[in-house]
Image (cartoon, rainbow, N blue to C red; front, side, top):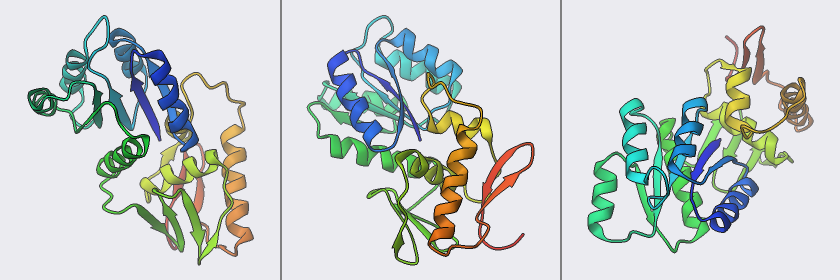
Length: 226
């Protein structure tokens, strides 16, 4: 999944971004309101983490502009403003969640997971498809109790596909949600990762054709025959 991190404190931004990258997320970092809106205009994000005290265009105005265009965006305010009035105002203006600084990274990541489940109408941390279980909390993927040894990027691809189970996902959509915007990919990078995931599924005797190539479009993960 892809996150837009809007935080003007550069050191804090780098620390949070590193933590999210270690958890398997793709992260774009913006340091002011103008840059944040520029990123938002050209990319699609699963979750937006927004500081309020940012230069050029302040956080609540950024929130307002995004909400005017997109009612479904998942926005988490991460701010030093801890007064109840600030929280109420942020939530009333359209934020989905509000976390105050200082904060624990584990709580931030848990809240991001929660928002991602809301975005895809998921009720549990564990996703399931054709005998494959994916736990969004532990980042563990297994088939019939056998753990799959996936790389972080392979996990991110499979997680996004399982969140979109039954839907055809374009190649561009997968790349946009799994890689950073600045990533310089080789033409066959995604195909290589998909092939590796399929091979690892076969290695644990998951012989169902779970991940299907949709010629000229992209991929689809689904249970059973269609």
